Length: 320
Image 1 (cartoon, rainbow, N blue to C red):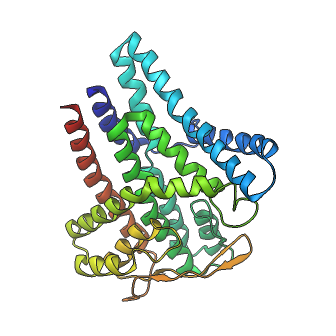
Image 2 (image 1 turned 180 degrees about the vertical axis):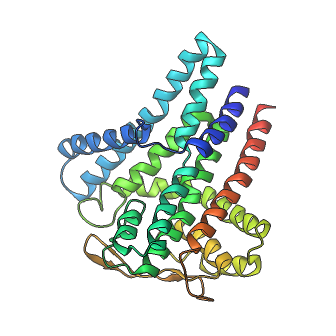
């Protein structure tokens, strides 16, 4: 419906201006609570065996993904029966809540601000809010690298992928994607106690992000070219290192970003007290510095605008 196209555009603009104020309730928090409650329930229902926990993860996925799509679909249907304008307003708010462009920039720039003042502890605390790794051992370069990596990776997960799903199926499909992404964030670990119950959510997240991650990387390369960055090196590193990650998707935008900025990203990281060995992404053509965080944010915004144009075009074609 044409209302979904307008809602997508309005929601994108609201996100750029408002971001995600911490004082306002957020649907992803509700999705997270549903995941936690479903995990507790299905762990009791299914046997505590590898097969039983995988079945629990599959059942959990069906419940969480289904509720996350059906609730907004029902709400929008009810709004539309009252007034199409009410539906437009509500779906615009939903689209805003699904996107994370400004919040990703704001949170990463908090890391930059702390680094600029020389407060390493504050920068570690700030970066711990946007990464899953342990940050206590990170030096300034490590903190900067972690911030740049999360901006690069979440350009896909937080901006391009949601835009693509919103373009195809409106807010219900957008929340369906957010549920998939949140389940992977909460359960998709290879360590106990999640290695079995998180198996299905992690695999479905890989499938759901397969196309968006690659599209995001190509759009990021296009944004880098428009911003005057090293597109030749960006393309070279993307081609070479885009699979240098346990996930088939995470290194796509990281490789593009590393090449465009001339940095070496990734490498070993600590998670839950365990050192995880990881390959590097990119070549160290220069030393990483604090200013690479705002540079990554410029790439984020450039990629977001290109993605908006593309996804609005896709939505318009679907409405023909």
